[in-house]
Image (spheres, rainbow, N blue to C red):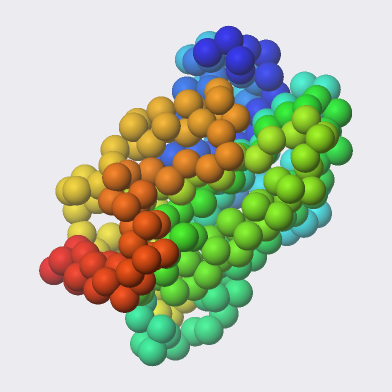
Amino acid sequence: MRAMQGKSVVVTGASMGIGEELSVALAARGANLVLAARSEDALQRVKQRCEAAGGKAIAVATDVGDPEACRRMVDRAVEAYGGVDVLVNNAGISMDARFEDVTDLTLFERLMRINYLGSVYCTHHALPHLKARRGLLVAVSSLTGKTGVPTRSGYAASKHAMNGFFDSLRVELMGTGVDVTVVCPGFVATNVRANALGKDGKPLQVSAHDETEGNMDVGTCVSIILKAMDQREREVVMTTKGKVGQYLKLFTPGFLDRIVFKAIQERRK
């Protein structure tokens, strides 16, 4: 817990879900938070929670799909706290539609811009400051960044891109003191799928199933991320099924495809 005391931590996608709960948990550890997301009102609510938990926090309304907005957000972090010790690239949107049913192909561009390029933009602007403090880069990816999932084709593609980027960057940064941690949650009980894009490119607003049923609770997910941050782990694949899936993909990929297909079919009933 002392590892985060007084550290400057930027969290994107901090207005809800994993980002919100991770920010509050970091604040309880004494971190100085920079909360980034598009909704100013939601950020102010999270800011109040962080301060009540014992940390400092500033809210910076940011569209991570805009590289200039990412630069301004990092500048605010440096202005407020003198630098950046940790950048958590958590902002993201999902989708829920079969590829053949998609009527608005721009949803694929939006997924790549937010999930992948948003991480690239924020990391680019924060990297000099992270190097100065021998800091930590955290990428909140997904199991779909390791294994494709039906009805999530664009989301999986963006997370595969994210994984590839941070795996490459980790090697480039060897010897600089900056570590890269990639965390890959499975299904987590948040409202991310209620905000997922449908076949017409518009948010679905209502999730297709009960998000509390069979999903990891957000508190457990945050605890795993915090442990990975404390230990500066290389990569964390969450859930036993997710770990087993990586072995099946390597040795029996066709069998894994059938398991994934059946699991998604069951979730959609």
